[in-house]
Length: 262
Ligand SMILES: Nc1ncnc2c1ncn2[C@@H]1O[C@H](COP(=O)(O)OP(=O)(O)O)[C@@H](O)[C@H]1O
Ligand SMILES: [Mg+2]
Image 1 (cartoon, rainbow, N blue to C red):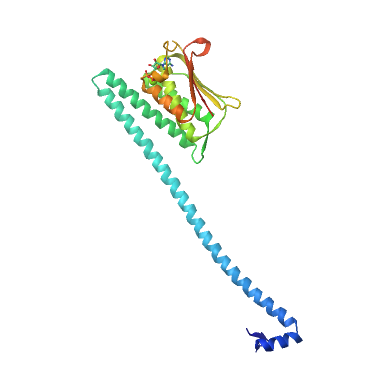
Image 2 (image 1 turned 60 degrees about the vertical axis):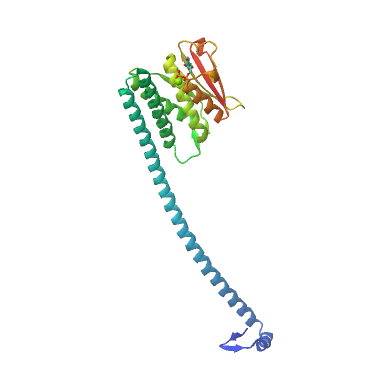
């Protein structure tokens, strides 16, 4: 390595002689060398930073694109459900057999409920959890409107729910369960339907649907029920690792189904 002092290049041997005489020459040379190194590092860092900036920009663009695509796919999914429900209702109206017509109407209503359950979840997009108390209130308001419009009467569903932040993966099955239990309460019960979400200290939550009117048939066992509703409820309760209990409703009237889960 050669060192430049006052515009003169010195061979390494010569440099040590010079440095011996004037030690500051070595210090300046070291500083210059370090400065050059630092400039090189700064240049490299600026390049990396520019690259990171470009990547961040690309990432933001991709996130925006994904959001648009996700909204579009939700929209298509809900439109698809709407179309299936309309087709089923149309078939129900044209069916010559009343039993077939009624089954088709039940199927159409289930599809409409699936739409409602998902629509409400998508309002709370972007999160892994759902404010379940509020979700339940909105869902039941939708059901009241839908079911009231369906058979001309005005089913009254009251909701009394604690606020609970639940994972979406639990909220969706619970939405279906409530939907099936409300459908049965309307079909077999009378008066007001009460939906409650209570916190069981240390043991998770209890979600119940109760109605007035006749009690459950004697010897009723959901496990032995042939109906599709109870089969759906039981399988979804198992899916979330919950427990289903049932019995009479308030003041021994009607029926009450409770799902315990944590
Ligand atoms: N809220 C309720 N009140 C009285 N009986 C009920 C109630 N919910 C369910 N059941 C009984 O449970 C049975 C099974 O219900 P489900 O599987 O939903 O079938 P479906 O509604 O098609 O009859 C019903 O036929 C009814 O006897
Ligand atoms: Mg049913």
